[in-house]
Structures are given as C-alpha cells and as structure tokens.
Image 1 (cartoon, rainbow, N blue to C red):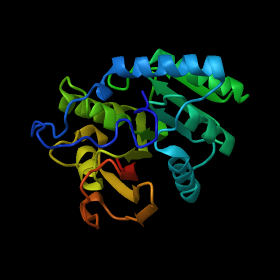
Image 2 (tube, rainbow, N blue to C red):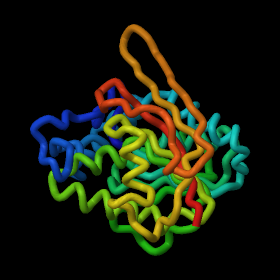
Image 3 (cartoon, one colour):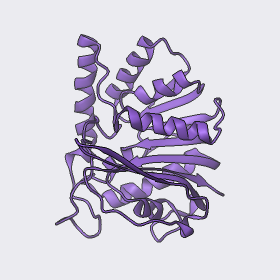
Length: 264
C-alpha cells in the first residue's frame, strides 16, 4: 500500500471535526486493504493495457526532495533502503536510476507488487527487491535497513476504521524492528503536523521504547494549491525535545516531510 495516487492526495488530510477524540481522524475506506487491493488491481490492468504507470503519491517533486536529502546527507549508494508501502514502485525506479543498489519495496497488496515488478522490468532494472509484506505483521526476514521511507502509508493506516490507534503503535514497533541503529526514517505526510509525528515516533507518551531516542535532522513543510507552491524549510540538529518552529493545522494542502534518526 502506498497511500494512494497523487493529485491532491487521495489519503490526504481528513477532517478531525466530529471524529473520536481517542483517534483524532475520521475513519475511512482509504485506510483499508480492500480499498488498495482494488486500486492496484485497476492500475495493474491499466498498465497492462496502456502502459500507464499510474499516479505518483505526492508527485515527482516529493521524490526529488527525498533523493536530494539523501544526497545532501551523503547516504552511501550501497546503503540498504526500504520503501514502506511502495505502491506502483515508481520511487524505487528513481532511487535505482540515481544509483542506489540495495533497494527493497514492500506492499501488502499483491497487485501493487505485481505492478511494481512490471514497471521495474519495463525500465530494465534488476537491482530492486520486491516483497508482499504487511508492515503491521512483518516476517522476521526484514531488518537492518539504513533508510526507511514512508510516503503516505502511515497516513492511510491512521484512517483505518478498525482500531487505528493500535495499528499506529504496531507500525512503530515494526519500524523499530527493521530500522538499524543510526539509521534514518524519512516520512512524508499530509495528515499530521511535524510535532504530532515526532510525538508518535519519539519518546513521548505514545512512543514504543524499543525504537530508542530519535533525532530530527531536517524538516520541510510544503503548502500547495493551484496558484502557487510555497515551501518552508528548517534544519533541526538537536534532540527532538528541542525542536523549533510553530505547528500548522493539518489540511488537504499541507504536506510535511522530515527525517528522524534512530539514536540507540
């Protein structure tokens, strides 16, 4: 599951008004496996008939930003990279074209993995691993990744009608099992503010101790509409507890991307 096609964000920020206080989000079919199975079955058929790879979640600019971040922070090209909820696998293709050679994409939708495989084959690439995996119920074979990337999957999980709070906790547990110490977690979201995400993944009341301490190294906030693109970026080099900047309310036009490093 990649959290859906791009455009304005199919799993983009849902209204919190009227939703249960315990969860904070209105439950949606966008958080269910059935929805994404149907999406990727359609996209697979479209690719087979017309060669259309489908939409890019958060657009090409989002992919370029992540790759530029990896370049800026001198991530080795042989570093192990995990794309959580890879969807059509287009981001995997871009990583491979840039030169990364140890790339794995997982998705719980078999149709998504089949689509990714077809697109990767069309591009003539062979250094990409694909696995049908539910990130909330992982096999023991996935571990030790230098970089874990999420472009919307955590957003979709947060909209699951069936106990999303527990599923978010399980996501953090899974992340702790696959991300190596000193590894980086790069997440892009349009449902959460920076402060909320740091609270979910760091040593806050909702955190999972196994993940250890986290450092936030870079943050960018993008507001988009049909008129303009505006980016507000800041570098955060201290502990997450010393983060700076104001919080923005989640809306369909707010996207946040930032990286956090597992410290222990």
